[in-house]
Length: 241
Image (cartoon, rainbow, N blue to C red; front, top):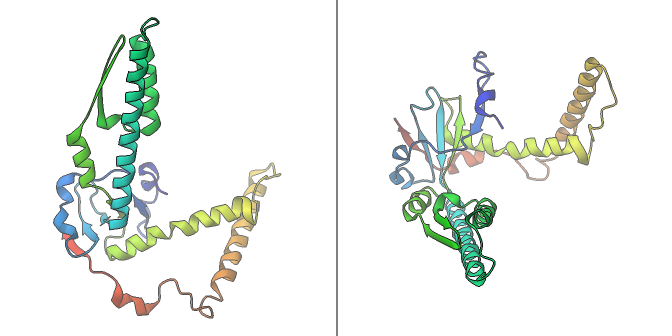
């Protein structure tokens, strides 16, 4: 949940660590396929992020899902371009101008977000397009990859990923606070001190609610991270500079 701007805030506090995720991948040369020969997780270093640990994850199911989604969006985008071409051919009297065609094409490109994979040529009564095969291949090579970023360089990469995956609990807590259980809004206080107190009480209530859910977990044989699973954790490839 930390943006690049917010990551700078905790840096003055040495004891405060953080875990986030990259919205973009580091340079492709760092992400060699051989990193995932033995496991789907690898710890790497990058000069772009000095003093940080990057845990690169490559779940096979995620790769398949992204591949299918991209192929579907490419197919649908091409079908829409063909539809526009048929419309251009039908308009023998009231011809479509380049501006009108550009508006239709932009609507398709923005709707499916596949503009980076198509090259288009637009003139009056003319639309031509072509796929950027090289770009599609480069993107396909990175299918399924995502990177967890943390300031805690001494922790195992697996623990960093597990910590990031617990973000779902944060989202559940916000949902609980906002709408489902506590309904922190509307806030009917005017003074800042009263508003802070209101939010503090709600956070305390959320903590109690969390405790009530987790307290009976051992009785129900539900454990978040039992020690018995430590031996079953997959090995992580050595850090690559």
